[in-house]
Image (cartoon, rainbow, N blue to C red; front, side, top):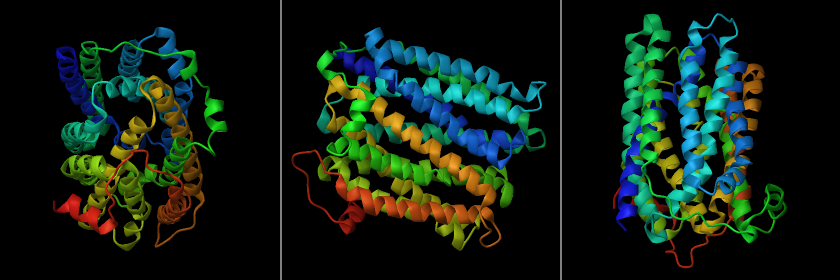
Length: 422
């Protein structure tokens, strides 16, 4: 028992430093590319190819883990390599080449690929530390705390960029140095975690093609394709909101930062409530509820583009995404036995990554060729993304069933009441 407690303590600090890295990089790679004079098509590549690389490497994630006979070793190797990749990324402005945005794309592919290699093994490893009836509450609490760390880090990054707005590339250098150091600290704390014995057998092994062949009859496979399909529709537009704010609306880096941190701030306030509610009513009920809100998120951008109004839109986004993302992970925990979790997490991430990549690539093409709406090309892309999201939710979400044996029945008004007031 002490091993588990000490391991969870080390995992907490790993999460803190990993969240610092995420806060300093996740929403600032597109602005970094814009500072390097990237085009809209290159932004599309930056948003798509890393997801493709992450998807491809996860095809072998479970096999690598089984060959090493350790989820911990796989995670440590991938995290260390991801930290190293930040070294050339931060020095790109000082390269003599003219095609710096494309160099950034290549390096971010490596950065994302190494990070993705650890997702399946780490998720399976962590799932054995928490009892199944406490996962919603525990991960809700954990994500709330670590989300706060990511918000503070993102705010720090925005302040640095605003301070160095006349020499913004130097500002990015400072941010990326901190991100690299944080990832190495994260790796250090991962080395101190305890790994329960890794058990796998030939019966638990199934190929990616076996998984695809069972898609029609498998509730879990239908869930995977629903989430991936929704993410495809989301990523038709998602990579270009930063372009729209910084290039088209000419927001300052500080205004951009305030808008992007609104989502994780809302998540911090609500995610523990989502976790407790999901433990009671089931993950699928929450997923379907949140997906409807996610589908409509681009529409308010057509109504008004004042920063104060957009803060309200981002609050709604944080409300929806916090419940959705938490329940996606918890549903996988509930649906899959421990011996199969590494492989199932990997296959989920493979399919999700492919769909995200395809969405961003198609979005990059449409962003350059869409007709103007209210004076902006990107607004046409946003409304198209919203329509595609609604179609995905209404067609595919009814086909997914809850796997928990006993859950409380609840309707949409009840969910609102439990999350916002209870």
